[in-house]
Every structure is written in structure tokens, then in C-alpha cells.
Length: 152
Ligand SMILES: Nc1ncnc2c1ncn2[C@@H]1O[C@H](COP(=O)(O)OP(=O)(O)OP(=O)(O)O)[C@@H](O)[C@H]1O
Ligand SMILES: [Mg+2]
Image (cartoon, rainbow, N blue to C red):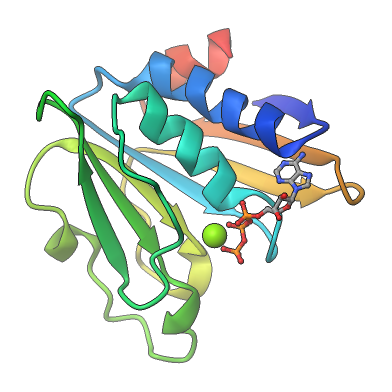
């Protein structure tokens, strides 16, 4: 487990970038972002995307559950899911249905559904400590993210 604190939006983006660099060559890595509204999930995701070489603007996928981004060289894929609106829908959501290849899979509001959790994932818990301070607690479950959590 690793705990990091940031003091601005750009520091959170930079933390996402650092984390992304450590994870970008994993064939399939799932990152679960668990935190309140405005805690910085999408901001962190923007940094992850930058590390993969994605040039598109990454926003919360409000009207769809998932947005897929490709890096400029087409070699890296980011799947960005926001399950906020799934509340109450039930537990029949299947993450694998949305993923059609290798890449980094980032999930905002992962605990809207039961049984979503894959076997291996990086869990990032986000806490709003103040208007500008955010705390990130990172726990790796499974093999692929061990090194990232160690070095971040
Ligand atoms: N240290 C910080 N890190 C990240 N965001 C911060 C920080 N301090 C202030 N902010 C502000 O908090 C907000 C974070 O928004 P963001 O969209 O990343 O949150 P979110 O967790 O994705 O929210 P939602 O659940 O609505 O999707 C932004 O308005 C940003 O300017
Ligand atoms: Mg968001």
C-alpha cells in the first residue's frame, strides 16, 4: 500500500502520469478509482492518458459508460469507464464485455456494481482532505501493479 497527497489539480495529473509510466507496458491493467464527487478521479485519469501517449482530451464519459482512447501511435489503449449512473441497475454488469483488447482499464465508481472486480487490479482510494488537498491510497491486488505501487 502507498499513500500520496497532492495539493493541486496539476499535481494530481502529474501523479497519474507517474503511475501511468510505471504501468503503460502492462498488457492489461485494471485501475479502480474509488472516491467522492470531485475527489480527482478524472484528473488522475488525464495523467494516466498522457503517459500512454493519448492526445485527446479525457473527460468523464457522462453519457456513455465507457470511452476508448488510442495513443497517437495506436499502440496503447485506454478504456475509461464511469459507472456512476449504474446505481441501482443491479449487478449484471460485465467489465469484459466492454474490453475488446489489451490496454489500461480505468474505472470511476467501481463499487456501483457487485461482482465487477477482476482478479488483479490496482485500487486507488481518493480522499478530499480540503478544497485543494487530495489523498490517494494505492493498493495492488495481484501481480501486474506490484512494481508500480513500489516505485510511485
Ligand atoms: N489536489 C487536487 N487534485 C485534483 N483535483 C483538485 C485538487 N484540488 C482541487 N481540485 C479540483 O477538484 C475537482 C476534481 O474533479 P474531477 O473531475 O477530477 O473529480 P472526479 O473524482 O472525477 O469527480 P466525479 O465523481 O464527478 O467524476 C476539479 O474541479 C479540480 O480543480
Ligand atoms: Mg470523474
